[in-house]
Image 1: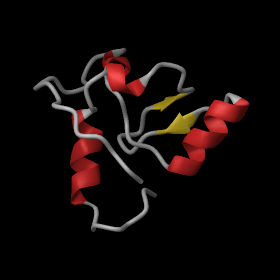
Image 2 (image 1 turned 90 degrees about the vertical axis):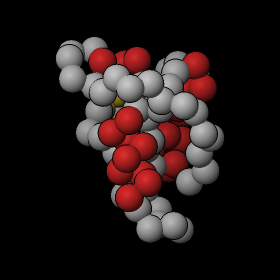
Image 3 (image 1 turned 180 degrees about the horizontal axis):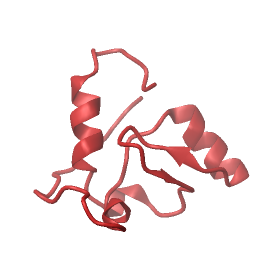
Length: 78
């Protein structure tokens, strides 16, 4: 999975709707299916949603980034 580096704010998702202010890491095959078929996907942090917005407009979810960084290089997102 390729990812762009985006500086994340110090905010962490803690209140309802906070996850919506971030872009999230998810499996590439789930993203493709979601975009083609309108299916919901699950981010590394556990957020479930149907992606519709341009993720480059939002900072990266700190929880997703932490989980992604903890993975071994070359490991596919689960």
